[in-house]
Amino acid sequence: MNQIERLKVKYPRSIVWSFGDTPDMADTLADLVVKGIKTASCCSLSSFMSENEVPTIGSYSIILNSTGTPVCVVRTISLKIIRFSEVTDSFARKEGEGDLSLSDWKEEHRVFFEREGSYSESMELVAEEFELIKVLQNSLI
Image (tube, rainbow, N blue to C red; front, side, top):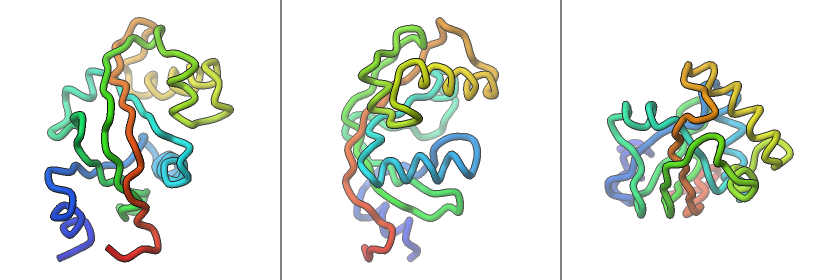
């Protein structure tokens, strides 16, 4: 049984995924979660609806780095649908990226959602907050 299979036994119905759309983003954002800096994330509602498996409140996620190695387990504590234009300073800080400001969050996420082809100020996002349950790097399960 490989590490992901063992984790799925320990955390039933967990989903497995990585952050972002580039290897660098997957590593950088996973590292922020491991350090306890990143406690939230978001995606477009359209991409959320197209996924086969999505987080639910109380569910676990096994976060992968760019090589597909599990680095941590998080538990979803909140899911909300909000518009891009309605993201708050508080949520931007919880995302833990850049300089933690709302203006930096908006610029970086605008670029990300433009690459995805879904950007608009009124686009709907699924805003997720989570808690770090276990760091897996350099640890035995």
